[in-house]
Length: 65
Image (cartoon, rainbow, N blue to C red; front, side):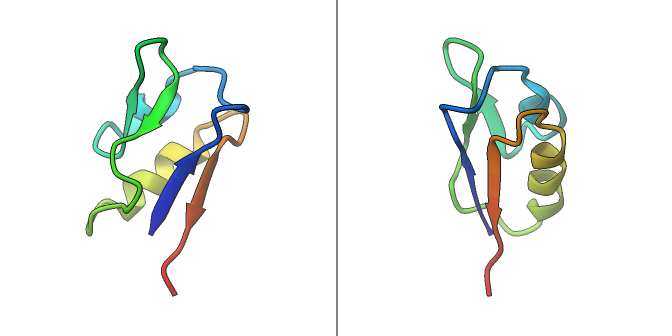
């Protein structure tokens, strides 16, 4: 699974990194950033949770085939 945050859409609520700090973090301005574009095995559920909490829908998940 890969995860991306659209910087043009993110407004910095911080919900993604509040619920899934293993996948997301904050930049120096408080906007969400992805720790690793390729989600480590076992953290897929956390990535989905973080994405589902984003009120702007700025997070995109790409499932592996």
